[in-house]
Image (cartoon, rainbow, N blue to C red; front, side, top):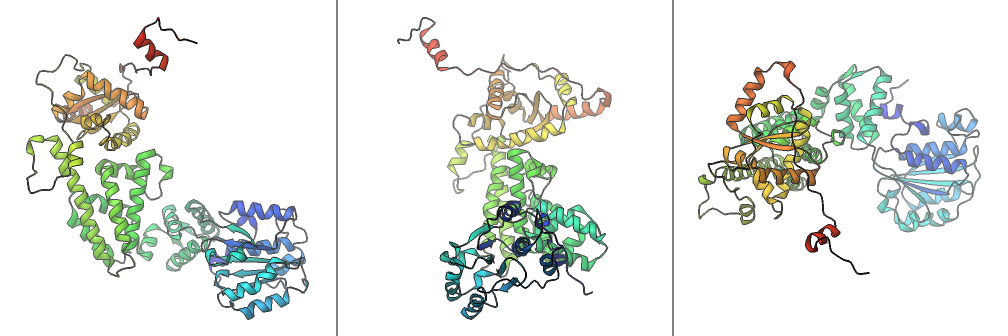
Length: 555
């Protein structure tokens, strides 16, 4: 027997085998069970999502003599369908049979009764390819067909079907199949075939399929032609000229760490090895999308390209406002896809702009941390809005104020550090990175100014330790600022934690002490005294504060 490709071998033979179109299958099954079968349907959706397969299964099911929840596959009609020679299921390719004469031939045949089954079913594939005249010639038959005739029009471009035709049909929209469902089905097929595989390789194929099950199996077929015994991520990347997530994240981080020459060299090496630059740009967009989602929700199940640690690494090194600028740069370069074949040059220019975004941000942060080293000259442009927002917090006097937090001594901070938790730090870092959002909010900008240039050092369930220069640490540790910061984090983000600030010297001391502490002394709970949260006053409380307890309200 001649070899049959995977997407034909594993084409759904039953409704239960159709992937990702549950609501459509349920509707069609209910229509058959309740005998509410329409005379014309339009199955619309992207390629490879099951339109023609479902049309054939529907045609088999309505002609099955023993139908319950599925066709029986045992009656004469089912056997004829399985052998591929059922006389009452007619499939027409509208791409090559799109004229009036082809439609006239169908119109002449519909008057005749079915030869074997209950219904005569016409499946017109790529129906949008029919000419306007062909559609018009079919209108009357679609509106009032004989009771034994059913039309199913399958199309990837429903906008090209005449509205007068569409109004005579029931329309079902086939959606793209999720990456998870494609991965699951592909894994099942590989297990049936007895082929070992890496899960990451299957995920990459599912992602490349872009919602089409048939595309996924075609890609899988190509990989198995290279190595019939196994499927690895490395093979998938080499066959299709893909770049790994590790390469892409390293490339992106290099851009924002001043290593633009290394990033450009890496890009050119990937290009020489056959990497698709357009896909690389799209992958970088997807990486940024993952980072922004993770920064907002902290949920790894929403990520499609990165894992939590990879997203956290980017969050730690690249500010959110720089990510937003990078999105614009990548969108702009992808818009030039059809304008010029030399896409590599445009992508290199895009990388240079992205590196510039990071440099300007770093320069601004340094200026804020060290206001005495102002570099701006009269000839250099100044962005007024940013400069206004990035005012340096007022420095505290050398003599520490009376309300300085005495709890932030070395022993206490060491106890906090010994009780610190990596997972808590990751979740707190996500909130910490959102402070840039308050840069331009007048009432909350003071908290941005208070923390700008600092770094999250450690977290436990009751406290956060941050690190900055000496002035910043002293400023944050004053009770006035610290209590205001506590209330802000509590009301804005629901974080009920005290904030303690240290400078770089204290940080190094704490690290050394931490290393010397035996492991059995770590992870011991430490008591943290918190401020009392300010209760929100009701309208009546506010009136009483103004007029006293003798306040009378006239009826």
